[in-house]
Structures are given as structure tokens and as C-alpha cells.
Amino acid sequence: ATEIKAVITLFGATGDLAHRKLYPSLFNLFRKGFLADNFALLGTSRSEWSDADFQAKVRESISKVDEDQAGQYDAFVKHFFYQPHDVTNPEHYDKLNERIAELEDKFATEGNRLFYMSMAPRFFGTIAANIKSQGLLSDNGFNRLVIEKPFGRDFASAQELNKELTETFDENQIFRIDHYLGKEMVQNISALRFGNTAIEALWNNQYIDNIQVTLSEDMGVEERAGYYDQSGALRDMVQNHIMQVVAQLAMEQPLTFTDQDIRAEKAKALRSLRKYTPSEAAANFVRGQYAAGDNNNEYRKEDGVDPKSITETYVAAKLTFDSYRWAGVPFYVRTGKLLAGKFTRVDVVFKKPLIDIFATPANSNDQKLNNNVLTIYIDPTPGFSLTLNAKKVGQGYTTEPIDLAFSQSAEQKDLSPEPYERLFHDALEGNSTNFASWSEIADAWQFVDVIRQVWDHEEPNFPNYQPGSMGPKEADELLARDGRQWVY
Ligand code: NAD
Image 1 (tube, helix red, strand yellow):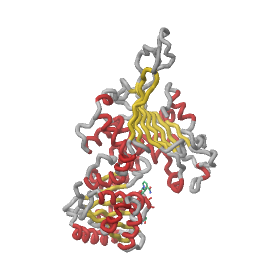
Image 2 (image 1 turned 30 degrees about the vertical axis):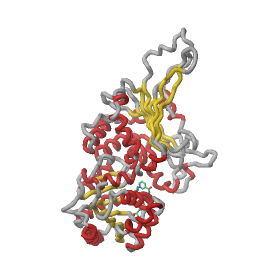
Image 3 (image 1 turned 120 degrees about the vertical axis):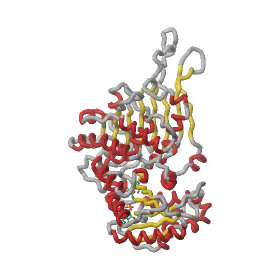
């Protein structure tokens, strides 16, 4: 492993995300040798903690990562420091700057500074402005900003935020987290496509009938209810994660496998996504909200949810690309809470052979040929499967679908880094492949805003789906009217 040198300044160091994801990810990078002697993390938030208090919290957070490595806990937490800090007070940044400079000396980090904003988004712009005005940017190493989601709540607010950030950081210094891009199988989409003639040669409207993307959650809104009720599935899942997965499926082959080229192709793909008019949006999007089922869940009765809420907990949609490769191939996407299971998958449905030579009267084959389906399992168990038609064993000539399947072993799964570990590493290395660029975010918001406006002006027929189902019946009708159905 190449060792990374940097001082990381973390805003929101006492928060839930830092405790559950960020410290364990950094510990993994430490025990794998990506972080060694020359790094330090300066945690900040309003709590009046000492360095020792903070180190104790970090230790607690990593205590379950790998008990065999417990001997390394002390060595790791020695790199952690804490500064009480109010992000809205410019003077407080002067103290931060002093402490960063001390840590740079102590850990010989060559002036590299990474700022991580893990706080309520309303503070993002303020922090960036203060970093600049109080002179926290390094002039002899790199300056990078990692920023948590959500990136705005519509195009206008995202644009405003981006303007605020880019007054301090250049686009190539900004790393916008979308943890779906840190998933092993999302990254594997490129290997599958561009590493296999047998796949990529068929990856177009001549051979593909439709593509389906499903991000299914089996839990309700839980303790995030207050936030979720202001957001909804369209903003929370479709604008970011679904758009990012779809862009990887739809993009052309990048010239080289570098962040710049990959981002350029994804941005192009999203530009070719047809921006719906309000009436097209209404026709091609379905929303849902869950209702009481056997387990007595009802969204409107959750703590923190408005009893008359029209927030959607489910979205299904038909997306259309106006590109040479995809003209005529719908991308059906869906996501929702309290569905039949917790999984993420992509189903690529190929066209049937133009002629079914087995279905002749002379032949007793009453079985029609099935569509070949390539499934990419993203969660929980990464894998692929491809269903083919094969001859059924025995006399006569009947066909039946069979499955070629690959699934990651438990051992491989263990070895595979968590999304946050991978993304932290990439940001420290300055590789932005797995972060969303401004252009992609802008296109995704512009696409989603039209739907939001239509929905905000029409009273939905909520609640409309049962917990444990795969969503409202309108989601099935969305495909049925095209003569299709969901694979799962
Ligand atoms: P949190 O509310 O648990 O933590 C917020 C942090 O900000 C705390 O450390 C708090 O002390 C600090 N803070 C608040 N006001 C401050 C001020 N004026 N000055 C200084 N510090 C202040 O939030 P979280 O759940 O850790 O989320 C952080 C970010 O990560 C958010 O952008 C969120 O959307 C995103 N995120 C969180 C999760 C998750 O699972 N928790 C998942 C995905 C994205």
C-alpha cells in the first residue's frame, strides 16, 4: 500500500456518521497500511471534549472492527485530536488553523489538507466560506473537500451550494459522497461491460429489450422520519443513487479508465436522458406511500411524520435515453421503504430471438422461449446471473430456462472494503472516479425537479401499498402497458 500523508479536518466529529462509518473506515485503511505515521485527524464539533475524550470515543467506535487487531487501537487513536468549534463563528477557524499547522509539523504531512463535512447541509456553504476567509487552505500541499449528501434539495439550491463551495475549492478538489458508488458491484458494472466482448457487443438497443434497476429497502423510516418527511424517496434515492447506477449502465466506453474520462461519459449519458415535460413526468412516474399491514406500520403514523403527509416512500419510473445506443430501450427504476426485502439489483432483459423455431406444431414444445436476463446483484450478496434457454433433458424437444450464476464467497465479501473505506481512500488519493461531478448532479436535479413540481401540485391517493409488497399496483401497470413486467 502507498502511504497517504494528510491532516484530515472533520466537521461533525461527534456525529452518528463519523462514529458508525468514518472512524472504522479510517482504521481499516490504517491496518492495511494506506495510513501509517504521517496522518492526523482533527475532529471538531460544538461539544467541549478534550483530545483524550475524543480518542476514547474513536476507540469505542473501532472496537468491533477487527478484534485480532486490538493491539493497533492505541497506535491508531494517537493520530486523533479534537477542537471544540462552532462552524458559524469565523474566529474559531483561527484556532483550527493553528492546530492544523501543529499537526502538520508533528506528523510531517507535507501540507496536505483534507476537509470532511459530515454535518447538516445548511452549514456546508458557511464552512467553505470560513475556510477561505480565515486562510485554512494550504499553499504547499493539496486541499480537498469531501462533502456528505444531500447536495441540495432541488436544482436551484444545489446550484447555490455549488457556487458557495467553488468560491473556495475547484471542481477537481470537491469529492461529493454518494456511497452507492463505493459498492463493489456498482464498480463492477464497468468490468462486466468493458472487459467482456460477450456482454458489451450486445449492450445496445439491438439486443436489449429493457433494463430494470431496483433499490429495495425492508425497513421504514425509523429515526430519520423527520428528515425523510421533508425529503421523500425521489430526492433521497432517485436523484442520487439511482441516477448514478443508471449512468454507469448507460454510458459509452470511456477513452481511458481514469476519473476524468469516466466522469465525462457519465455526464454525457445523463445529458442524453430525456428531460420530461410535466405531462410526460406524470405518465412515466409512479409514487407510493406505505400503509398499515400485518405489522401495523403506517407511514403517516410514524413519529416525526405529518399525519397528512404526502411524502412518497416509493418511486417507480420509466426513463428514456435519446441516444443512438439506447433509443427505444426503457430503463425502469424503482425504490421504496418497507418492501419485500433489502436488496439492490439490476436486471438487463435481452430481446427474444426474432423467430422461435422450437414453437412449431411439429414439435411438442409448449414452452415459449424466455428472455435472457443478466442480473447484477449489488446487495446484499454481490454476484451475477445469466438466464439462458436450454434443452430439457429427455425425449422430444422442450426448452427450459437455466441459470449461470456467480456469487461472491463469504471470504471475498469480507475482503471487500466498505463503501466509506473505499471512498475515503480515493479522496485521500485524489481519485474522483467514484464521486459525483457537478454536471451529473445538475442534470439529475433538473430531471427530478419536473416530477417534484407535478407531484407537489396534485393530491396523491395515499397510502397505496402494503408493507412487504413490491409497491403499488401502478408500478406494475407502468410496465404492463408496454407489454412488460418486473423480473423480480
Ligand atoms: P449528526 O446530527 O449525528 O451530527 C452532526 C454533527 O454536527 C455533530 O458532531 C454536531 O455536534 C455537529 N454540529 C452541529 N451544529 C454545529 C455547529 N454550529 N458547529 C459545529 N458543529 C456542529 O449527523 P450525522 O447523522 O452524522 O450526519 C452528518 C452528515 O452525513 C449529514 O450531511 C447527513 O446527511 C450525512 N449522512 C449521514 C448518514 C448516517 O447514516 N448518519 C448517512 C448518509 C449521509
